[in-house]
Amino acid sequence: MLKILIASSKGGAGKTMLATNLAAYYAVEIGNTVLVDADRQGSSLRWSERRATYTYPVLGLSGLHRDWEKQIPDDAQHVIIDTPAGIRADEVTGYLADVNVVLVPVLPSAIDLEAAEPFLAQIAELPPIKRGKVAVGVVANRLKPWTNASRLAVEEMRRFAFPVVGELRDTQGYVLANALGKSIFDYRSELVRSHQEDWIKMLRWLKKHG
Image 1 (cartoon, one colour):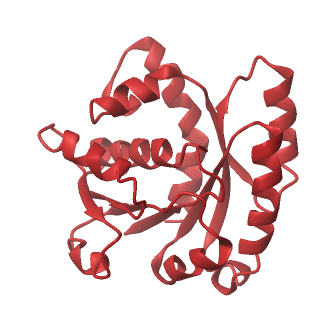
Image 2 (cartoon, helix red, strand yellow):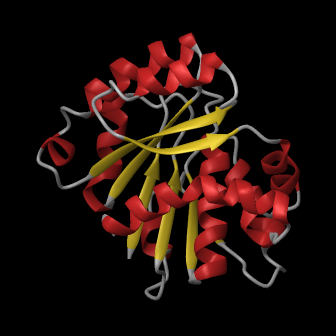
């Protein structure tokens, strides 16, 4: 079972978008996927509820309850945990005992870069991460690759304590799909396929750490 923790020290980095699209990918391609929503906003949980009647549902669990881990079915193959917005490094510790990887989405803006760097440096010192038991990857999110700003931001991210394992372009497709309980992996159009390709590098990295 691959367990993925998604965390960001700053709100609005696209944490839930990352969580829901990963959950949908695994549900469509493999099956038996669980999405745990530990954020009080409950966006991931509502997305799971909207998806419940589709061909490839995702089991949504509230991570606000103490016993949420006991609710994960034995046959679950992937578990994605959407942590609270603006989580602190010391709060990440409580999730690390039973996860394989941590993904940290970062937007290509000076404010987001400045917030991400100390957060990543702090979680690098957490024992399970420092000992190499839990891998950490940075996801450059909402990029506009045709702009200098995004290119420079990705270069800055590559100087962080952890590797950039994904570079996702900005598109309204994520927002529109989320409102329906879907993801870009539920569609097969040529336009959507180009955005799906953005995920290949990250998915390969996750598979390596599963």
